[in-house]
Length: 388
Image 1 (cartoon, rainbow, N blue to C red):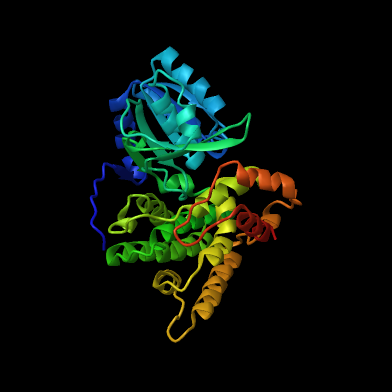
Image 2 (cartoon, rainbow, N blue to C red; image 1 turned 135 degrees about the horizontal axis):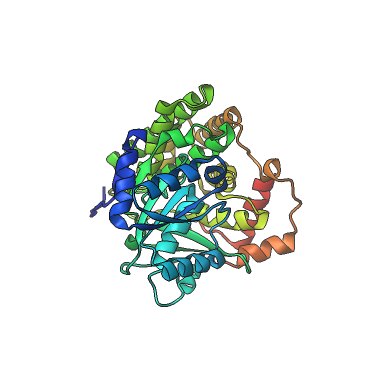
């Protein structure tokens, strides 16, 4: 285990019974609040109920509903709305798109200069004022609930960027399993597998940390077990609650304690796929993951531990090639059981234009990995294989 420093400022309210604490917590931040949410929350009637509850305790509200993508164009509209109306807090409700948009709205509204240049270059920030910020995930997925990362795209150019740092960590989040009860099983499965991939990325580091490995492998097993339970018994709040807590805690840093460095190449490559195929984040990264895993696999002990501890593969007496084959077979069986796609063409049939795809590969620059070198040709081959 490497030397490390760890500090956590996250605050979680868990359960439907924390509704009043959530409302009062928001009011303590401001009596003028912007709520941003995705289409499901807006159309289900739950957005109207939340706005009414805010109004009843003296909070004036504005809403940006039906948010399909976190774009800088819409963020500029939100910044102006916040400044013109002296809005003091932003509540992001939904998945990663809504929560990331809320983070960048809360931060950008307080800056004198347009922050797109920072986002476009995937910058890190350590200081800077922001509005009050609360997240309310409506299903388990990316871990954006309380992390310090946010993603955004410039719609006019399809350029994807991100901003990272402590100022983007929300003041608190509310995990309410009741909001996830109406999520379709397939949507839930993609969200949970996204969380599993992020936990896998924490595990798959050549530096060993017994605590970190135990945390991430246990989280993965817990999510797999409760995903099956939630699909077999739709609306099971106990299973949904386990999944939401696991997804939220996944990004708290416990899985990387004592591990220096990480391999983010799977997220880099996912970005290319997401914007070339015009697919959401979750199905893009879920479909890519087994193909990426095969491409970075090596004889390092961490891979044997990963397949054994996280996926229950019997690795004793097996060669490295056999471990990979058994591990990928186990993952493929899991995908099929939960209705997850193994190729992009299962999601969205599309014949790739080689020249256009190579342009998308070149645009973000080099792809760095701690396991191997990825040339543009390597990325083209990997993405083509993922397409199916």
